[in-house]
Image 1 (cartoon, helix red, strand yellow):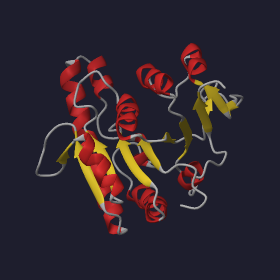
Image 2: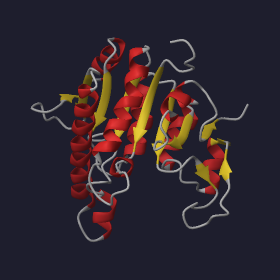
Image 3: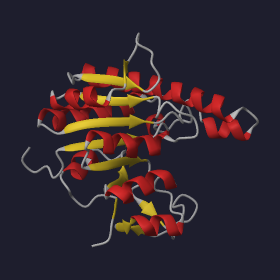
Image 4: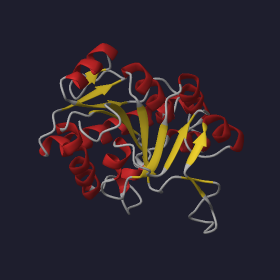
Amino acid sequence: MSGHRYRRVLLKLSGEALMGDGSYGIDPAVLESLAAQIKPLNESGVEIAIVVGGGNIFRGLAASARGMDRAQADYMGMLATVMNALALQDALERHGVFTRVMSAIEMQAVAEPYIRRRAIRHLEKGRVVIFAAGTGNPYFTTDTTAALRALEIGAECIMKATKVDGVYDDDPVTNPAAVRFDELEYIEVLNRGLRVMDNTAISLCMDNRLPIIVFDVKKSGNIERAVNGERVGTLVRGGS
């Protein structure tokens, strides 16, 4: 564990991050890159839990905006996260990483049911735990799931892996003059409406002083840099 600042972390992966340069689905090269980055950390003793989104397959909020019942759309989105979790599990296990998928919606043929103490035990045994199906409830995002699960398992930080290299004051894709923040306070994120995580997730982290690191997952080695406490992306935490 030499050099690692954090002993237990929760990695939040958006579904969109799994698409790579595509517009839909899962890019096998992205899965391979993630597995290759996670394996040495796991072998060095870092306990890693993962919450994965489903936006690369189905977005419940978008479907709801087009007239679908919101609860029904959200349940479909939760099932999309299970597909992503199974794909990620396959990539990790092909790299020799022992992995467990735990689903908030019971589907015993493909995943274990989420039980907090069992999840912690898996982590203590050196297994990577992938949390799927969100919280199991509609109207809650996978951002909120990440904050909730991180607190439940005693993670020391949330590492939010995205397709951009941190948090900006505007969309860097459409505004080349957008400024990236090296560090932010939770309340500033809420007051400025910055797109870090949804307000419920930010409030949970703020109330429990759980730091969030937002970084570019496409750059190889960034996961290890974040675990080591190096300056990478944007750090969100409370004031001194």
